[in-house]
Length: 146
Image (tube, rainbow, N blue to C red; front, side):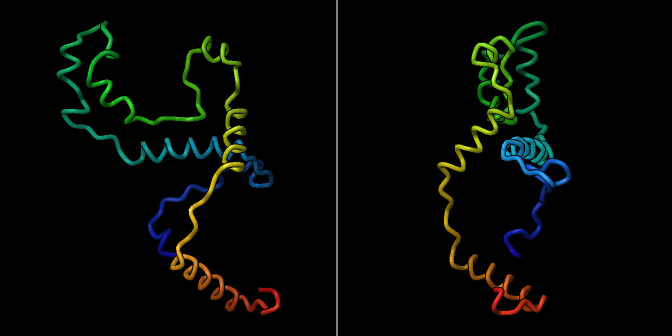
């Protein structure tokens, strides 16, 4: 399959008990973890802009960087989780103390209810059908079972 050639695949998302059980909430959480891993594995650029030595020198020790333009420009370059809640405990508790798995299940339900996938192109559908036909022929699957 040309669509997957050279792809880095992560196996087992959403699986529990060695694949005996599947959990949609776990799938959503694992998807977020995989995105974070892929972000880090992709490399973190190290250059004059990302090191920000000039900003560090300007701000100095024991001061804050939140109001610096550099922080604003780069703050979304790190992972941006949607399920992991990084707020302080008091804020999290004030909003109902919803656990990550509960948020993940809600996200999964939203996807199941509202997602409209983009249809496959005729070319991709034909390639997939060709692969299935080839495997059925190799496995001697009777025509009546296809």
